[in-house]
Length: 291
Image (cartoon, rainbow, N blue to C red; front, side, top):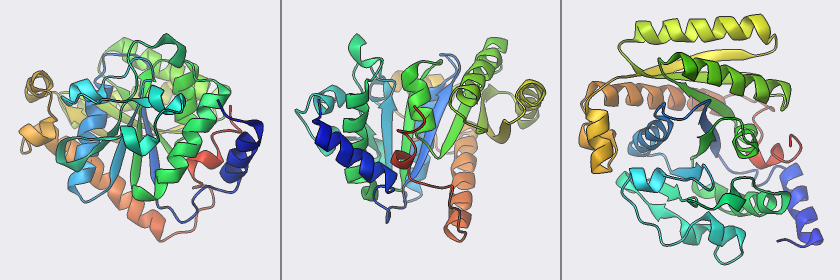
């Protein structure tokens, strides 16, 4: 897809740190298994950040099986496939979602894109690099599991946020994902969001259980508890209406949980701006070497 010279130029840009003036924060939100509400968490967390005057781009990184647009009732005319085939620039496929949120739609039902090759990844990196200074947050909504696309986007982010639910299989699969990302891709730091719980107490018990297992079997891994999202009947109602529950039910318990998460992220971001941390490189500076 790209000429060798262009690949070298892109790689040089990545190694030099891309747009070094950018304040972009890259989050990868992932899960070990499907059905834990990951995409709903992504959409509503992004909506909450946007309501706090943050410029947010959600990248539907479940490439080949994307569904963020469906969840939000959008019907994009173009998608990532058009970018990778050179038919469109990335800004031409971005669609505006609820509250001014921007969505970069993936494809659906395109098997050849479920495993991006080297050329496709370089195209993607170059395109994202070009628009990086237009956003405060880039959020990858990865697929579930341990595919090469999932590990690629997780390794590309500043922070990896793992979504689990109360189901035992959710914890087992989350551990498997963390193990792969640690042992095969060198990732050491993870943050946990526990979805569909009855209380913060229940969420912290789940966190303690997963953390104890990783502490025992994965010496170099640290998991930090980011927060919980309460089980709420307003969530399936909003899904049926194809709108964020943050928009339809802004004063509900579940919306408060998501607001708490976004406040935490913003407070941490403010602290980062006042400290010098050489490890906080831009994602395209690290994504190529780790694969």
